[in-house]
Length: 422
Image (cartoon, rainbow, N blue to C red; front, side, top):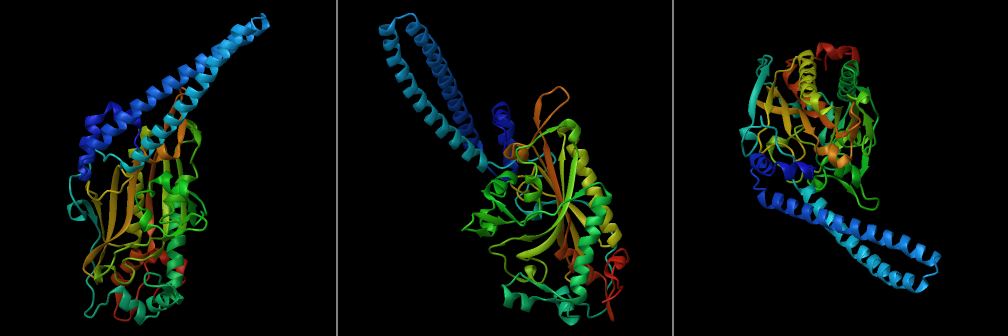
């Protein structure tokens, strides 16, 4: 959530930067400024009325002590009117504050100055590529055919049990899945991230805290009876560990990692491009999350990019990095880089990671603050990244490592799988 003071002091710049999202925010921004002015005026009136009432109460007490009961009773009538006015002002203040907060919840984060203009993923900017695309043998198969051929992932069985988008991993497929999770967690903890096991359901406050609500409400599975949401990513419970926290500057930086299943409704996703592991309703992911001093967050962002690069180098998968344009960057993010692995059998790029800096947007919703060395309170910066999402990494391994007599296992994963070929 954007800070009102920031909006008030940078009105034109906020509108200009939100225009990168193809959003004309001028009316919303002006309404925020108007509501904030009303809120401040009401707060001043309420404070003055309460102060006057308190002063009169003291005066009434002194008059009673002095035996001037008649004068005291006259003033009591005035204090009654002041209390009624205080109640009315308090109700008006709460209504105005709620209207202001509800409007702020609808305004996305302002994009970083480096975010390119654009309408969709077709306008994202490729900034880096690495790795050689392998040449496969004649008759090479896409991963969903390989999964069936070697009996390692059963999509039809998952459809029977639950529905489309809930695959069942079997035998060496399940072992490879587990190996990837363990490998990712080991790489992250070796880089200084503390491992957490996190809840797979969150409450409404957690969804609002990281920006999934109200923006992505229709994409989340909702348990209505308990008003809980299945997590779309470990970012949500992981970042909410620090909700309503006042940290010391010495506590920063904080880095955590965790493995969770992720649940996404992905409403309206159909067609060949979502076949197999390309688009799922339930999938596994290992996440990295950082809480940073504002002065260090973009240095930390670059460090996260290098960390994901290192993992993909070890897996020897060809990949590229995209800087997302204004029309594709997520609601809460100021800057996002996407990693995509090349699927040789499908002849297309598959997104496998997003690394994002949210600056103070999530921290303001979360009330996540720290005291600097001068004793002043500031909002932290929050960042997260996939390290990594498993389905498309697994698809890339199956397709790019296939041979005529089986699927090789990346060398770095053999100690985790216990076998070198499927």
